[in-house]
Structure formats: C-alpha cells, structure tokens
Image (cartoon, rainbow, N blue to C red; front, top):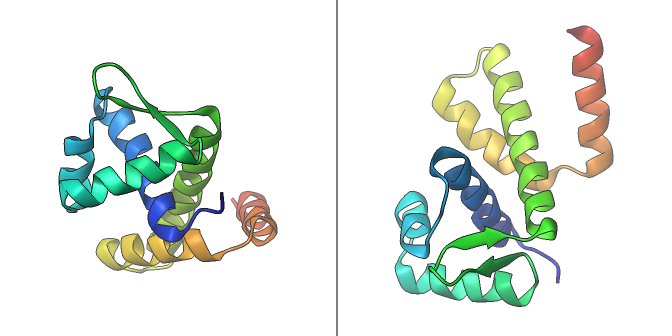
Length: 122
C-alpha cells in the first residue's frame, strides 16, 4: 500500500500523541487533527488494512513496526526542517507549516544529504 500525505499525517499524529500521553484512541486523534470522527474512522480502517496500525481490545491505536518506521521518518524530517527554517530566521508558525509540507515532498536521498550537510556545518 502506497501512503498518501493524509495517511502519513495520521501516522505521524499517532506517534506524537503516543509520545505525549501513552495510549491513543480515535477520538484523541480526531481532536488533535481537527477532523471528524467518521473521517478518522475511515483513515484508521485504511491504515489497519495496509498493516500500519492495529486497534487493541480497549480501542487504542497502536502502530505496527511498519507504521512506526514511517511515522518516525516523517517526524524526524519535520523536526529537522522546522529547526533549519527557524535557524534561518523564519517565524515559528511559518516554519511549522513549511516543514509539514517539505517532509512529504522530499526524497530520502535528498533528506539524508541535507541532514549530513547540516551535521558537518554544526
């Protein structure tokens, strides 16, 4: 299953919510993302079918190994670009929005090269 931007956003949001407070339910995800519960339910179904998450007996969303890998990759990119943009003088809100767009658009090769370059400079 190829993930689109929306599905990637869901995985990243589940990772963030899990890091903040442990268990994550669909209602938590809906509130965090500002989406309706039916929209979240549909996305969760697709992510379950694709093998990116499971729902436990308490209704908690748990990333599979595959889902965790994707979510961590996206979150790393997001943090990197947000930090780089802020360091370049971009305001916090714009940096957050732009980082969100860039994280989905950049290839793995380009991201790794930029990350290496930033580490060498720092």
